[in-house]
Picture (tube, one colour):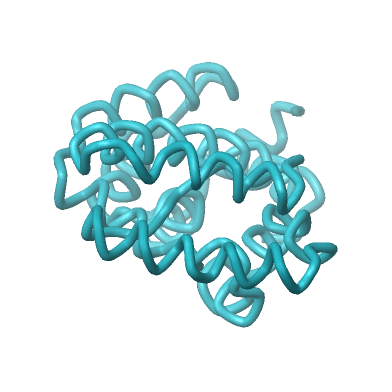
Length: 174
């Protein structure tokens, strides 16, 4: 990304920066800390600081970020929760068969009942069948394992969204 995109991020008002970073990771503590950490020298510095801030978040902050995501396969919620980013990230579900879509809905419900929070996976580039397979493999884990797995997936999503934020800033669309 160009210096111009980073300059635009660094120049955002505090409120606009918090909103931009909250769109990348739905945790207020994370977004506030990222806004306060500016200015960033470059994208790598921004991502490095993002990793550090995310690693300092506790269970409540992690669960807050999870709640900012639509359930995998819920296209209506994807538009509401994550706008164009979430809808595009989950586009692999758009070609799911009825059987796969139904299995995903049931799997989401079973997972949430067992874990106490929603299933989080970095869906970008994954087919519906891949996402379902990952869900089925992970539902046997403990809630503690899944909190860690979900937090790692959230960090991948955050990195992708930071890239999207930079691209939007480069294009002047934010």
